[in-house]
Image (cartoon, rainbow, N blue to C red; front, side, top):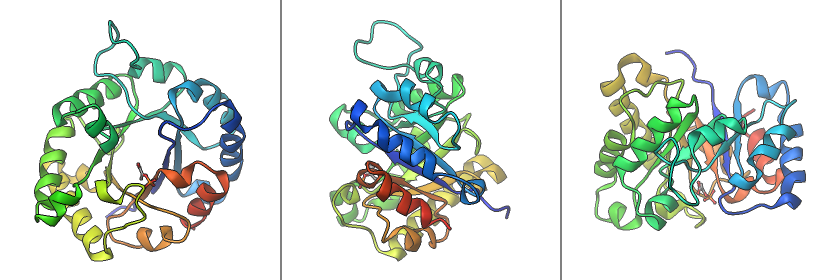
Length: 251
Ligand code: PEP
């Protein structure tokens, strides 16, 4: 198999004002050769900082993306942001289907898929998030949930160029709890099989990120698990020192 180029992605969620731009600048400056030649890096600040952030990252390999987009091209959708607007701000990626969106905004797999399609139509790479709740895990439904979410949230037109999958167990997000190595390995092997079954050989190249309570201390161990092709980081992406420690773990 060809070696998959890893991706480190940060999700700032609803955090960050102009005062945080120095952190973005520090991350952009810290993401440099030689390591940046081997891995891709992405930061998703709030939409309010998108345009300024991409300007700050002009000379850095750090890519900037958004945390969500609407499924329509434009129109009467107060408060939403379109894929075109993200691309217009020079954003190159967008997260869709984060569990906080699924839960707080009742986003369905079908909606997540439509958002991903809208993003692809404007040339954005999507980070499509899936993962089981604590209840689903405790009742033995984890792989069923992953199968359903992968099948229904990932558009037919997805390729390894346009689509990244992030496995984020809902109970591991912001909790300090992480699945066992064996559980992560099982989930990622399962997702890989599902993607190969659906997309053929290109399914082997679709990047599978792990997300949930990642920090500088556990990153290297997580990256050593097979079929873990990168990390999606929430809390520890806010400060440059924390995010760059995780970046260093890709060495
Ligand atoms: C996330 O919400 O995408 C996430 C992984 O959060 P945290 O790293 O804070 O658990």
